[in-house]
Amino acid sequence: MSWPEPPPVCRVCGEPADDTDSAICNWCGLRFHLTLRQGEPTKDCGRVWVNEAYMALEYACQACLRGDPPPDEGEPLLGAPGEGEPPLGGQH
Image 1 (cartoon, rainbow, N blue to C red):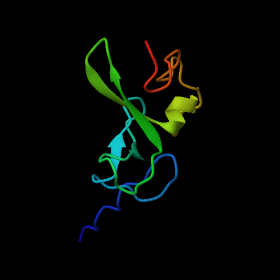
Image 2: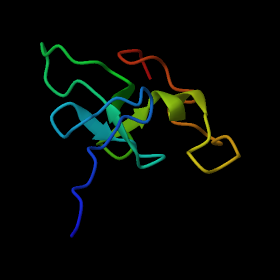
Image 3: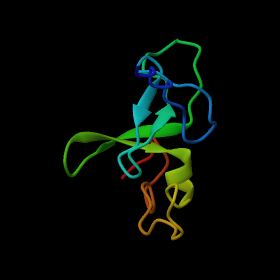
Image 4: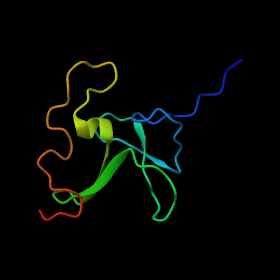
């Protein structure tokens, strides 16, 4: 007999997070809360921005943005996402 998988949880806040209100961090590969539709009452535990060099969306959880090490790793991230970048909506 197999047991159902537990629902995924947000790396930042630890609360359940499903496909309708979360994204996967490009740095640690873990799920985090992110408002995917404007006007919906959800929480944001990370950010999304356009990487102008690759013309692609990049996703990062607040833990990676702070430079926290991924779970089970002791070293902080080097070159954490957003490092040296202006705030969202800022000029490049």
